[in-house]
Length: 88
Image (cartoon, rainbow, N blue to C red):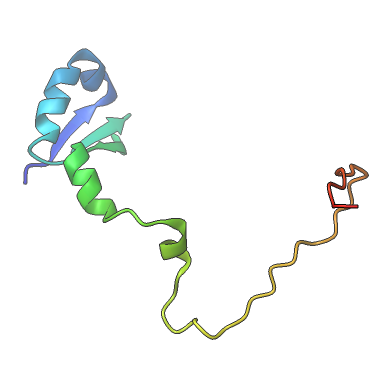
């Protein structure tokens, strides 16, 4: 893996160079000599974040199957009322 450093000015002048470099490894983009951003290929980004999960999968924690949660919403302090669509 090759790590490339480019200043913001260099990036603006030659974005193609930065994109080619990102295929070989991360590109560190500096502002006033200090690292500010990292450019990665999309494949490397996906590898870093791992597989995508559904919200349910993300909230699931092993060992929590028997725990009950109180998910009642707090009482609203708003004067806005919603219509009652209940059957009469």
